[in-house]
Image (cartoon, rainbow, N blue to C red; front, side):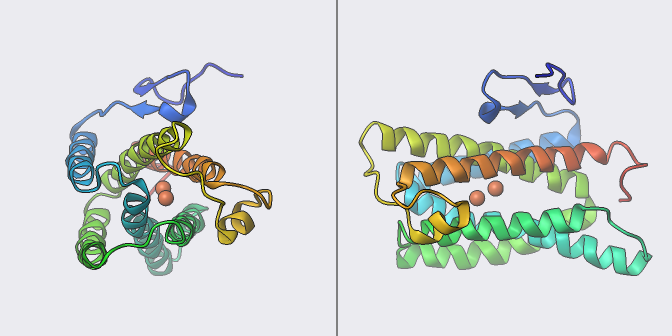
Length: 221
Ligand SMILES: [Fe+2]
Ligand SMILES: [Fe+2]
């Protein structure tokens, strides 16, 4: 296994699930600080209610891939240029996040207040992320990279609560068994591990997309 890291600013941790990219420059700082701020609000609001947290935040997580994919699709049509695999990758990410939502909504039902937050969050976040992507695709992908770092961390906490018995390790929903091809007797613990692996992949892909903006031959802004 290679010890080489793609970038010196990526802190190499023993656990690949705990990877963190140190912010470098203004765009990274904006993305990182915004992520920390939103994390603070999420922690304050949801506390230890991990199932509810997953449902509400997955409704947000499904937005960036669709917005980024849509913008890059339109750009490809206008410029008559291929977008290599970016569009497909981003739309696949959006669909993967939607499957996380379809899974967790079988485990925790949002209350009426959370449903209101979901509506409000989609309106605000869709618009804000769209504008951010148009202004700076690099910052938009960096922001998603940091969101995904937080998602990995949150699902690790969720897993710990299952392992220490504070949360019941209920049977996995059928939709999750089918989607991740889990054993028929899979439990919530296996679902959380599968979801967390997806988030780690989104993290690496989005940090990688953000990095590629620094290599203009690879991406057209
Ligand atoms: Fe997710
Ligand atoms: Fe994700």
